[in-house]
Structure formats: C-alpha cells, structure tokens
Image (cartoon, rainbow, N blue to C red; front, side, top):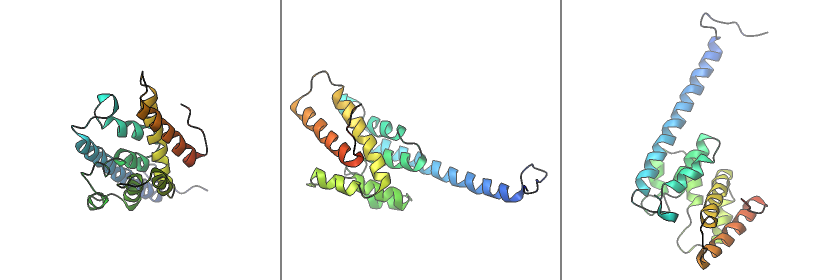
Length: 173
C-alpha cells in the first residue's frame, strides 16, 4: 500500500520531498531571474540585427528552451563574448558549474576558427541545445531580410554548416 496520510492530506515523507522540490525550484528561478537581469544590463545600449535592442536575441533563444537550466544558459550565452563579463564573474555571482561551463563553450575566443568553436560546443549537451536555438534564431533573422548582402549569404551558409554538424540535419525553417 500507500503511505499513511497525515491530517494535512500528505504523508510527512511526501511533504518533505515537496518542500525540497519547491525550495530547489525557487533557487533555480532566482538564478534565472538573476541571469535575465545580468543579460539585460550587459546588452543595454547595444543593437542587434534590424537595429533592435541586442537583448532580444538572447530572449528569443531562451524562450525556445524547455527547462530552467537551459533558459539560464540561453539568456547568458552571449554575455562573455561582449567582453563586459567573464566566466569567472559568473562563477563569482553563484551560477552553477554546468551553466558556467556551457557559457564558456558558447563563447567564441578571439581569432578562434568557427569550426573549432563548434567542435568545442559539441562537447556538452547543454551547449549544443543552446547553440542550436542560437543558430536557428540567427538564421531566421538573416533570412527575413528583404535583400541579402554577401555577408548575410556567407553567415547563412556558416549557420547551415554548423547546424548540420551539431544535429546531423539540414537547417530549414
């Protein structure tokens, strides 16, 4: 049978589990909220494609994620590349090793070949998941332009190659 039901309607064991899960969820939400604030601050004043605020891209990538850990990695995925923050800063702000490692992998080094960068991203599931959403968003932003420049065409080709490398599938959205 079932565990005995207390006066509150839940056994004390189940209640303790619920409290731990609830606490854990609140901690994850706090980290996500903190990550959103950091990303917004880092990207303030910057413009992305179509002259929109630069924070819009990480927000779109974050929205594609299906769990809080991935959302946190997604919203932070470009903060180190801005040069305004380091992975050590994220560690010092209390972000988990998983998040910090993923952000590190998602941050392309100066003078790093793109294919080498994608090879690094491929080493962790969280980084792959975020990068796929990043590529999809970048691809859609470029493809939606009325007139594609040579640079747009070159970037689209690069996104398609990286997507195929990460997923084994063709990028068609």
